[in-house]
Image 1 (cartoon, rainbow, N blue to C red):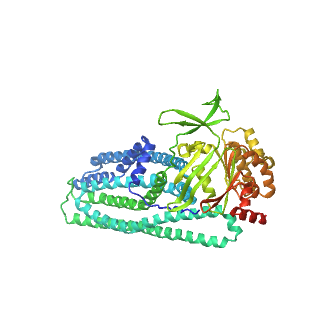
Image 2: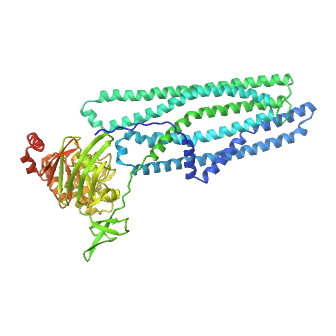
Length: 637
């Protein structure tokens, strides 16, 4: 059944910046304050040279006006220069320190964010991955993390430095001259209006660029997974057209965003240059006109004050430009951080079960829990009403009572499903695609929870069983096989991580996989990569069956388990499958007659309802829908 695919929404939410800072501080509660102290010190020191310049020029002017020589003012000038040099040295040390610390904090924070994201993903329900594009999920770890890196390592420190510098320079300007400060403020007002106009447009398109990047990554991931299908149906040209459309959208948004961003820098720089000239002209006029100075210092408005004020103006406009240049990075970083927090805030898989699976043994006919592995399992059921604990042997008795289910509200998939599978029984589901066969098995292992009705496992409501314990008791072989990077032995052992090599080999023999495995270059030590791309589809399926066999569960779910195996391979596997199913409760979804025909009971589903049930012979005798399916399949074979 089709599910809606989630779309990326990289828009910064309220409180995102606060949450980023809070997270980074929680990661480095001692290192971050030290880094901030270094940043503040470095920014303040970078603002004070104009004060020393004013003092030096004032001494020189005094010497010239009074006819004094170097001997009279030289020592004071040298003292000022030495103090400034020491401050610069300390500032250099501080800047070096905070840059090194920021590298540690940034990379460490990204690692911790990725750890939290991956850990979160492991706790999300299957529904999340069914309703979200996998390429979009990958972009959390690539694109969004990278924008967060820029935010933490560059944008926020630069904004802090610029903010402190601007604040310090405003104080110094007011200390020097109110008239000159007002001239600078007029120029800064113009810069702010330009930044708001151009920077706002740039930020808007950078956000859209984030969306386009996620779409492009999702499309590429989908095409990579389906490359064989693309080639089989000769869809290369159509795929290229589709990619050109998606990539074209990314180009347009990136082009617009960068046009705005590349325009903002030169415009602000030129406004700063013009303001520099205006301040120089206005300062000269104020000196020539002998306008009384208004300031906190009560310095006279002369050349010794105007010259350092020019440097202050240049530094001030430069800091404003730096703030403007960081707007796009901040917007992108906060958008990426919003998406990351969106993932971290996703509702986790609910598991309120309290019945667990434990090792058990019988002592004087009474089932008791034990630590050692006995090959016998039991459900440990603590009763909340009276505080007692009972142990129920794990047998594999599964029963449905009037179960209803829907993926989307108002669109039922299963209606009033009632069935039972006693220990050792083989139950088969047949029906058209979308009839609800796989959905029933998804409800048994609680990938999804039912809307109405009950499912009991060994007489226990499965809602009371912890999901980890429930799934440990189930073995599943799906139609689509997933193999992981590692050896063949590692992939078989994935079914039970504490299985020995001998147990893995025995499981492979049971599934009929041992023959082809021993013919691989390194046998069970052969490395598999790319989802087992160096194996045939049938061989991959055999490994999946072996993986289920090594887990040795009492209940098996075979969802088209032999669909990818040719007739000859199926004959080899069938004996192993029979051994695998022997003594277990088995749910089979298959169209192969060899699998369905031998089932104890066959259930025919149509549009979410069981319309026929019985053994193969009984259903054939009824000459109903199963008879039609069977005879049609027989003719095809």
